[in-house]
Image (tube, rainbow, N blue to C red; front, side, top):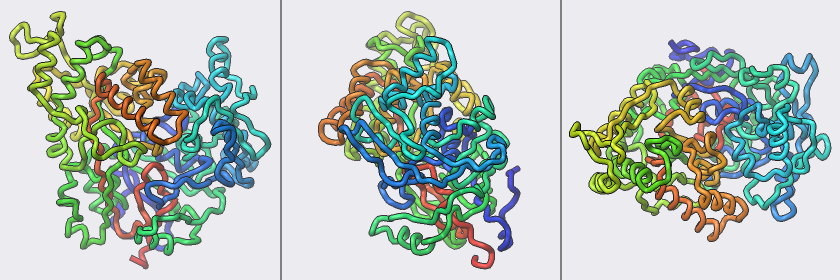
Length: 587
């Protein structure tokens, strides 16, 4: 049963405006330093404020000040970044503040940034933070680890300090021309108040308190997330700069110019993992938005990419984009069966990749709602080439069989399944989820592996539990997807960066030449030299195949006519404050 009841009848004019839709997978929590999943990040992005955000309508992207007064002052060849914060911004009321109004200050960002380095927080994002080269931050972490004492938040480090109450300064140990991307959005460097974190302790993930447009009002884990308008949210009006040829975007600016944000009072997100009830709830008016039409229903909603006439007659609106994402299966490089760097282990992974029929997956399970990926670099990211063709998308069962034959993966006992070169059984244990769509993908992939003579064993579990096991290195193979939160491909490369093993690097791939490429790319401005390094990194990823990247997804969104202003963000997670729900009298 859905958490908020039916929405088939319009709400009274004086009732709160409620945005209702669903996540297709469960959240993991609401502490910015501890989350990596899209669903938790979406909630967090609406509670916490980042220094900057992305213009809601500009495409492909435009960065604008949020709680910062202006874009950073940059000096010393992109190594010193100084940001001035707007005064008069306040956190949402909370018992941790003991009845006082708590203003946002520069020190809150210093504290929030340091939390990523605190070993006790166990942030899965620390490897990316470390690569930014904030002077003194890693030393602070190392001291806490080596001396086995609590992380010293009060120790001032040269690379991260509050110059005064409203001025924040970063000093980096190397040029970082794209450091600004790290300061965008509340789901990354979102400002937290130290007293709130200390007040709630280990329960901080259940008690997010920020300065953003919404606050968490209720949470039934893996079931319902309810947020309400933050009554202390600063006066902020609708502003956006759509492209000159974006007529729909221009119309939204005209319609909402000067409107105070957020325009809705409540956001209710149900967790509905199965596609059919999620789809039927939207058709029945229980959800205002169908974010990502389920693959099974994409041909029904948009045959040949055109909105179905029966939906158009109801005033339902459609948007479709090629999403900046990728789906992939990773191989645990520390696993004794599929991991390792010797030629036989590389051959096994590449054979699996070559035997994976991505074209059939797109045509059948995905109903045409994707394109084959040539690498992990996603559409819309810097360096993405739509004309690139690589082995990553190649399907060749004969080549796959020849590789396994060459390296001794043979069926020695005549049971139809190949054994390892040493004669030991060869079973690929694949993590999955219990929903029907995951089962469809499993069945499709099993057919490919059956044809190759490789036995699969499916290990089913709930998504949050599988994610924990993945971070702990307990899964052999798992198929997941990820979306970019930045136009820079650096975050994608961190998927294979050695120091990120066990966090962003689920495959635990460690290869020094690849790591050096990632480090060098951080220092360089965008240009031919950096692009050449990106291509080299892509070739290494294909050669060693720690990830079989499958597709970039085409996302179809539908909304009922009473939901006005929705535009799927590209790199941002924010849209709730920019949409409106029309009252009954105007429908």
